Image (cartoon, rainbow, N blue to C red; front, top):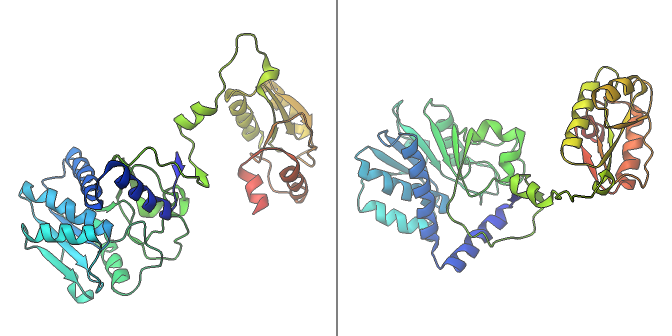
Length: 352
């Protein structure tokens, strides 16, 4: 699965609108309908909702969701963060539609306009979307802090407000969502450990964006379809030499379990031959636990040297190697001489 940047996500919408001959308001309603269907599956439609909207297309998602929720005869309040701007075209369209059927529309101009919210009301965050490019400040910051400070369930639409799509948001004010309803695919922000506390449970919703939008991306997420596209089928008369020779630098005294697990995983992925660079004190463990693997003594208690060779098509390094001064030297050499690398665990710690 390709991971798109914030700019590419905007381009994806435009590409879909042109290809499918639909408007931004149509895409907004698709998103709102997908959110509504999820709420229905969770048996939440009888709840009261308070939807907080910005004036962009994310806010339009919230307004459209309010329109879908109102026929259920439950209370739906909408609070709009006032910015002094008219808002996006889709926002203006759905605001006019909502004014025709509801009087529970409020505008937040300062902290004095924050609503009093009952404990059973579900909060929907549709304030800021993927276009956000600066930290929240002033009333927006105060509003998010207020919503985070009450015990209600918080559901974010597309992305928690305050969270950047594809760069760090550390030290920023961000909605702490219990659920984040995401559209079509993951965003880079959702794959960062530092953001886990903000996104809560991720729920993927399909809004039928074009499958023909295929730009170049810097990040791919491994999934079943990607793996299936690169796994080579075995020929009837082939042998292990036809399927690559991997090298693995793993393990140290007391941490050979990591090396064993990595070696078994490498073989399970289909490599033809595997050579493991391990410390001398771990060779017996490796050859007992993974007899298919060949071993090279690369040190005593830990790996001290790795010699690159044209025999290997890829090197995996890091699991259980510990952190030792000599690792910096052989990792630098491996980075420049091996055609491909998979780095994990203490290899990443050494680099950092």
